[in-house]
Amino acid sequence: MHHTADRSPWEQDHNFDEGNPLGERNTKVVVFLTASMMVGEIAGGLLFNSMALLADGWHMGTHVAALGITVAAYWYARRHAADRRFAFGTWKVGMLGGYTSAIVLGLVALYMATESARRLLAPLPIQYEQALAIAAVGLAVNLVSALLLKGHHGHAHDHGHHHGHGHEDLNLRAAYLHVLADALTSVLALVALAGGRFYGWDWLDPVMGIVGAMVVSVWAWGLLRDTSRALLDREMDPELVREIRACIETDSDTIITDLHVWRVGRGKYACILTLVATAPRSPDHYRALLQAHEELGHVTVEVHQCLGESPAQR
Image 1: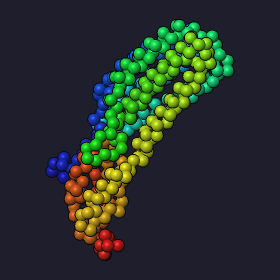
Image 2 (image 1 turned 120 degrees about the horizontal axis):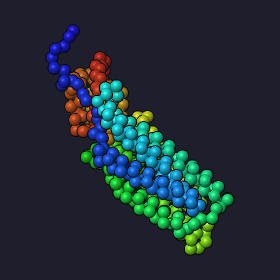
Image 3 (image 1 turned 30 degrees about the vertical axis):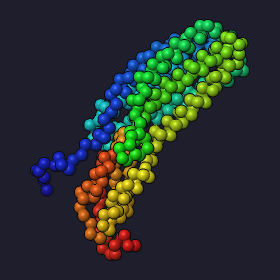
């Protein structure tokens, strides 16, 4: 049968994420600043034999690549937002970018640890004055970059229904953590270089590299955990599930027999539920019961009639 009537009331837009234009623009600025400082720090580390400075420079270099992943993910998600081949939009492109950046961050930590250990066993003479100057400039660039990204990666909001970190832009959070890691290694480089310059503690330079590697690895693990949870749809938020069940199962003798909830955007969830009732209503009736949950951007309801005793009485 060919339907000639307007089908728009039953069609849905599957692009659930509005993007983050300001975060994307500021990330591009940070990429330029970081790339410029990377060249200066690597050159300075090689010229002045500072492991802390060289580690900071290579650290910045990998962050340039990671920040580039963030920008590329934004671009790809925006360009393909209307592509119907993406079942629930392109929001997970950002999650994939954040996950990749987390891996890069972990590799950076591993490099910092191994190279610092090597320098601890076989130290090289360091030209402290020049290295201190470059590290100070590097810290200034990192702080400016952090200010550009701070606050734009979002956070969890409470609009009466608080559900974890649903409003957080993990793609931009990845960029922010890379900048914070840069700032940390810059601070540690300054401490190490100052200790060597004024107290003769040459061992402090590689030790600070190891300390920085440990902190960065913790950040990398946290980002890897959060992004992988979203990529694998392991987000059956217990509070949201309880609220959905409460809305549906308080209606007559209805019970939910199957329920799936997963995130499809920042602060947006999709929901598929199967319910059984002795006198079932239309799917629209049950969807209306969930209207108070604005975070549910896509709801599919499957209704079955129980021909025996009421399911609520079993």
